Image (tube, rainbow, N blue to C red; front, side):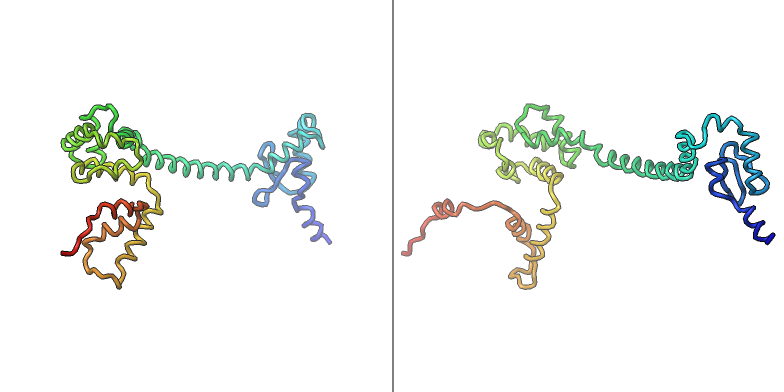
Amino acid sequence: MSESKTKKTYHFQEEWEEEFFFTTVRDKSVCLICGAAVALAKRHNVERHFSTLHRTFNASYPPGSTLRAEKSILNATAPASGALDRAAEKYTQLISRLGHEFEERFQDFDKLQPCVTFISNPFLQVDITCISEQLGETFNLNAGELEMEILTLQNDITLKAHQGSPHFWCLVDSEKYKGLHTAALKTACLFGSTYLCESAFSNMSFIKNKHRTRLTDAHLEDSIRVAVSSYTPNYSALVDSMQCQASH
């Protein structure tokens, strides 16, 4: 009987947390207001500590009041708040590192802007020497050769008549304007989709199958270009341009 009574007496009661603002920490009854611990987890000890040291607490926070309930909730959520702060710090650092990576990856956009603007319309009035150096530095090309190509292109009346065409760079001679053509292709690749890359590899695998009629890759580039291109030949014009070979 005495053993059962002793266990019941020394057992911390949950209602003490709201009634006397005590909690249990490592099997000790600790006051949530001042942090002091009582010797034994008896109601008498807890109540005496509260009424002696925190006599004005009931006046400020009457039992059953909204303020007391809010204080109880705040005390109860303190451990969760600490965990939330630690989680917030962890993810703040993660987002900060991610933002730094984005900043490093896209910091070259300011350098690319003049090049992209020129490729979009090569007939704009710009400093040819400056844009040649920028194109050369960005795409690893010879600035001197680029400057001569720009001068020649801007004075080409035929090309100037097609400056608004979306397929303008397809009309530019890749041998005569080798540097500019390379710069235009590299600029276009910056804005390409993964579909084009996957389509190119898929077509290359089909072209280089074991049943092909060529052992070399001499025409592989031309075959891939035809396979992935959306260009439709004008068959009527091609037929009209052919000369009939009469038999003698």
